[in-house]
Length: 375
Image 1 (tube, rainbow, N blue to C red):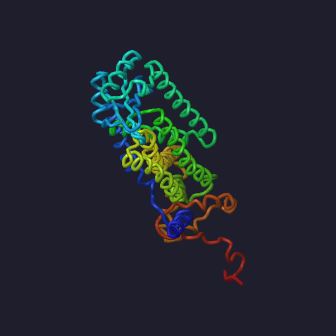
Image 2: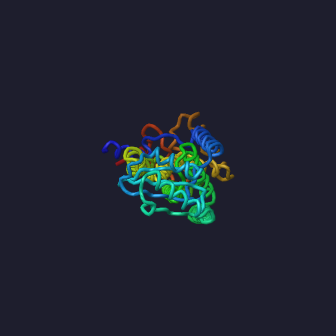
Image 3: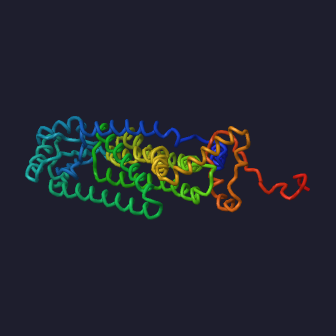
């Protein structure tokens, strides 16, 4: 852990790092490939919508029911003529879910199940969800998601700028698409818990993205008053300076969610945990990925399309070419004296590259002395 802390400090100071922005086309390609796979899975397999969205009935048998899950599923499908989902609960009872049936059919199925599993019909609890109510819930969920996305874009445009709002919006769409696509591929049931999980991971993804954006905003203040670094290089420094923090928060958040998904849902058989835990697990991982590999590099691309940023990049490259041709130290090509104070913040925003960073030589050193030596 101490080594990780030391690495985080070195990343923050720009002593080591990885050039995320330079390799952004690789990350864009990976994201496009994953997104296309998710969309194809969604189009081919579709989502397994729960009865809360399409209507149906849920039957709960008494405790310690002797009938197996496979037998109960067979009984329910024979009685209803529809596919049934059966889960064994912790107290030994069975949760039998049948979608697309009305109240009359539910009463008949309840009587048939009671005969098959040899219990009194009154001991089976039936919860009904009408199709119209399910459609209403689905519409409200989509409306809530749309309002959430709209407010997020407006807030980021006000707090930062529209380019960062666009980049964050693209990252959110990326996270939603991947999460929903994996639901389609895996076949897990989509319930209100899934929607809650989606909204939760979107908030987490935004948190991670805003942390990087805030660092980028601070480090690019008065960026055009210097000629040491381009916007993309400072954006890369912002990613590296918050990288360890993003990794730590993501791992800490994923551990309990992994416990719910793999131990609670897989080992212990608490299948009802799968609907929310899968969305959280996939969404947290996708959100951390998009904030590092998608959002900030996209902001750099959009910013460097601006004429001032193009001119800055041209000046920076010309300055470096001149320094390389003359063999003079790059840091000796300092800004005009009246701009020195304005560039202090940006000088700290050096791009994260492997190896130690050279320190600027003082231009006042030895000034006014014949020998140029310090007394």
